[in-house]
Image (cartoon, rainbow, N blue to C red; front, side):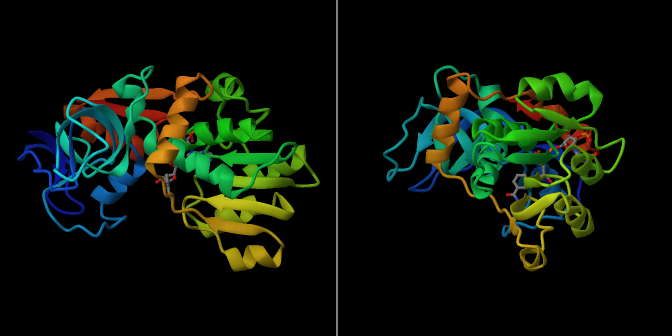
Length: 306
Ligand SMILES: NC(=O)c1ccc[n+]([C@@H]2O[C@H](COP(=O)([O-])OP(=O)(O)OC[C@H]3O[C@@H](n4cnc5c(N)ncnc54)[C@H](OP(=O)(O)O)[C@@H]3O)[C@@H](O)[C@H]2O)c1
């Protein structure tokens, strides 16, 4: 089968011909039609996010959608021919074994749309849940124009919050369409300064998707009033220091199950949640799509058609 894989951490991802994985008793083997690109894919490739596996060649990609090809004898939930989406062990390939995060694809979805959903949308959902957003609160989404951010804006709006989204002018209209009430352009002035100018009394929560540097996150946290919450996906929060200011700080390591996947799929199917595909590429072009995302040029999801 064709696969985009690395032969070692830090090696360039390349198109390889590899054997189709053989399903074990509990495994579901899927013929993939689309894979979703996430920043963790290039973080795994460059070695900055080490996985437990050291088996090379390592096929890249987690998110994907396709058709069940074979199942192990212990599998009862899926059968060959089922259209499914979820998380895989190497989704940038013709075939991959699914993880337990697998759900039937809703009828209204096409493979490329479904592949864009798993990590970004479930992370966004869990960020808003973690921040315990309630109606009337003011929530900043930092990194709002990205794959996770666009979904976080919609979930926070759905929870009844007034959402401030970071966005450059070219993304303003789209972010308003997603429900953002206020926009701050992170390329013009410090975000914290702009948020405090809008809300001198502070806001209720920051959902951060960009502050790898703890100093940058501390600066954003200055916008949060006592009693508020800061959730980041970049593991840069210092919960103790934030607690001293009566702020709950959470470094979110996303966990999703098939149930959450089904919940978000139903929202998308019902037209209550939009997924913006920013870039649709072929499997051969996946390495350059990874470079593009790493360079910070994505504005929403990148999907690889297989
Ligand atoms: N911990 C977990 O479980 C978990 C789960 C999912 C994702 N993550 C991490 O969360 C991060 C976001 O993921 P993603 O998929 O949303 O990434 P993404 O789609 O690549 O996000 C890119 C977006 O970030 C915006 N951005 C970059 N710098 C910014 C800044 N300083 N201020 C405001 N916006 C900025 C960009 O807009 P401009 O081009 O306009 O700057 C772009 O729209 C990644 O680092 C990812 O690895 C972690």
